[in-house]
Length: 94
Image (cartoon, rainbow, N blue to C red; front, side, top):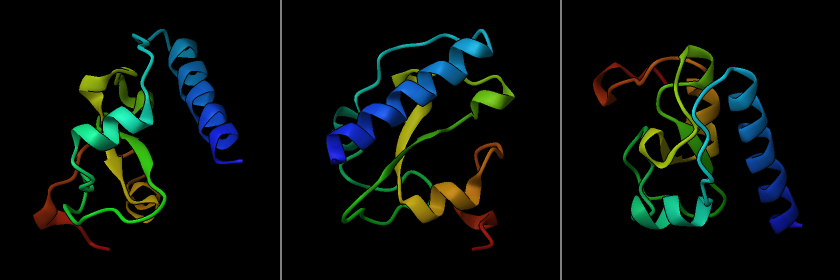
């Protein structure tokens, strides 16, 4: 079930990026998690359990779907950030 869920998430991100005519690279969530050492890119706390692959610059704001524009994030942090520009640790209100 987890592999199917991850596959669907990847396909959805790729579909949205292509729809917006953005650069699309095959991004593997496991590689992103390892690259980021299991640290949330939004709150800087360690990630234990499920995680999201967050677009630093959202696709809707012109960001691309590539390793350079993604980071591992807690699901709560990513859902709170939504499609806002990158937010600094000092300006977080959650």
